[in-house]
Image (cartoon, rainbow over all chains, first blue to last red; front, side):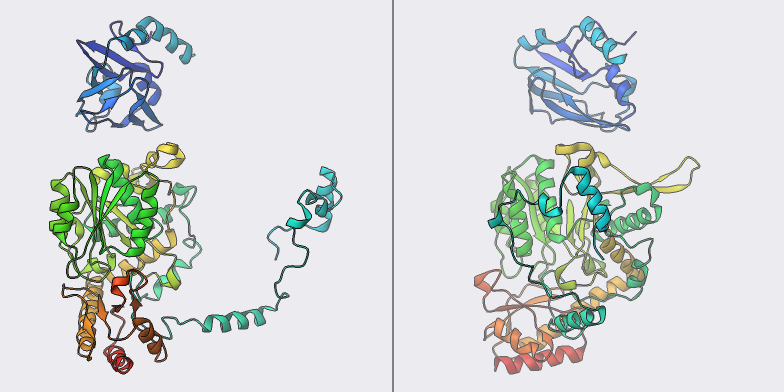
Length: 130
Length: 447
């Protein structure tokens, strides 16, 4: 059974988003980090920069591959996980916790509804995994 | 020997396979008026002996640094090239212009590049140097693009003390991404730092100075670094690594990126190339650095080995998001530089700097005693200086070639306001007799 917390929403590019008031915390899913293998580098935007839904906001690099990170939602980056450059491995060990990447102050609430539910994402992962 | 070696029989077989009667048939679709109807105007094939004689004769019409006494500089210098360099680079294991395509299978090549990177990083006072780029000009242009990527800013402040040819290349590179270039004027030979201060804004990605600059004058790198950093911009220093055996490394003075032309480190001038693009940065910038990078590691058995590292920066992995579209290096020239620095050592390289400077100052004093001749600038200079002449520098240069002296580079072609000026470089190779002979010939030429 894939690790897909029910209280989060997801993108088809394997990012998760967690609603925190008018903000959303963002990271990559357990499935994504498994596929990437050992993460060695994460490049994130600066606080204050703007991100747009389904446009890239950064890069995650593993020993196997480099992948773009896609913003689940549009808004302003208000927080960036400063620990990641020093300890990129927490993306592997704790993708939904210490491995969070950015916090976005959302432009609106509309896009949230467009994200995948945990159930939908599990279906996607199940299809991708086999 | 033909480059495509197939026999008439093979050609017939191939033509038959595709159903063409002759090679001429393959060209039938090209309109007759677009085709050359006569034989190419090239001489008939020659015997090797005749060909060598012909080419030797043609090459003898060039003035070269073996038969002439060379005071040319402006980016390419007649420094000593110790003879072991040519012997070592000619070994089959080393003799390639390229970074190997199966890099880890060529441990010796990677090791030599790793040593090169270490030497350049130490000379520049930086944490990391790449495996080299094409030349000083492309290194600087790549550094400017990198500063733009790192700071996400669009303006560059470029000192007029930077080699004008490099500035042209930077201008070309900046056109695509739409970077704005601002020139900072020179004071009396070195960059006017007040002009730099006025040009720097919150949009400035980098300040660029050359040290010593194009005119040979020293720059206040530390002050330039302070101005750049106060505005959140990076400081790019263009430096000739030969001089860094003696001068304080730019990294110790606050530079964030150091780039330059490494030709002086054992690479012959060869009429302007191939050259050696040095590129070194601080550790925190390494992931934005262009070019190949060799790293040291250990294998499964714990033995030391070498790999190409941080390749995710490069375009074979990152495609259009790569840090640069340069993904090779000038391996052979980098090897020459590595052998050169190994032969010279710390003491030898320092001596090259000391001798070049001392001889340049001896020459400058001797030339400035000639009536009508004076030094253009009063700023302290290193191994190169600009003279102001009472007669056309082009004519003086022509006159001195009769005495087998390459007198220097007239500056008019770079900037009309220097139309009376001649840029003279003096390396450790020049002797007192050569400098005195130059002084005598110059005195006669301007009298």
